[in-house]
Every structure is written in C-alpha cells, then in structure tokens.
Length: 179
Image 1: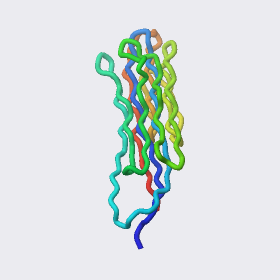
Image 2: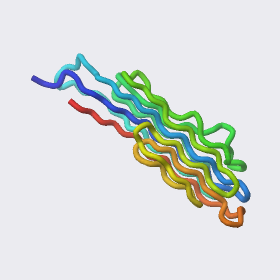
Image 3: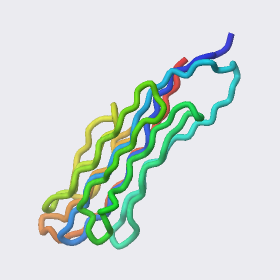
C-alpha cells in the first residue's frame, strides 16, 4: 500500500552563549521553535529532504562569540527556526539574554521557544527551553542547552565577580516522523 501521510514534529536548534568577561556575566541563549503537522497526499516512495538544525556554538574566553541555532525542516511542508542571538549582547558586554526565540512555521501547531534570561551579578542567565524540551539551569561556566533545541545557559564571573568563563553550546534540533 505504501505511506500516504505522516505526522511530523520539528524542533529548531538552540543558540549558544557568550563567554563572560570580568564583572559581566553572560546572558542565557534562546531556545528553538517547535511545529507539528500532519502531512497528507504523499506518494509512496516519495523522497523528502530533512534538515536538522545544529545547536549554536559556544563563545570562548578571549575568542569568538556564539552562534545562533539552526533551522530544522521536513521538505517544504513544515519547519522550525533556531534560537537567535540578542543584537544588544556583545563580546565586551554579554549580559543580555538571547531573543528572539525560534518559532514553528507552517505547522498545524506552531510554538515559540523561550528567550534566554539576562546575566545578573556574577551568575550567568538561564537558557531558554524549546517547547516540550525541558528546563535549563545556570552555572559558573556556561551549561549546554537541553535536547532538543534548548538554548545554552550563560557563564558567570566566579565568586570574585572578575573571573571569565566560557559560554556553552545550544542543543541541536530534532525531527520525529510517525506513520
């Protein structure tokens, strides 16, 4: 008979976080979006390209900044964007949390991930979660995003408020297909 319809769930990748700098912790990163769609009218044996968004890279002390999460897609039927970086956060002042979060696109259900929280005092901001993806914690160094699609948590500045730490990577996205 062959498969003529599928149900697809799609999560975008979470963003990575900046490294902290002396006296300035980094904010948490935004989570990826989520979409669910019933795709009908398929032809048995039809090939559909699938892209799973990568988690954003971590920022490192004295090095480069983080990157946004990648978009995930199931052909042109349904997709979810990754978590973005806050344009107000910089290598010199990484305190602002990641926003906007990723969103689902063209699904029967489209959900937005959570924005990252700002860094405060010597604590890194908590990373944003992807829908149905679990909560996030913060720590002295950045904490990787929770799979699927979670944004990383920011890095603190230590007990002396002056020690920089590396950021962390966002979690990759995910695609689940049921038939």
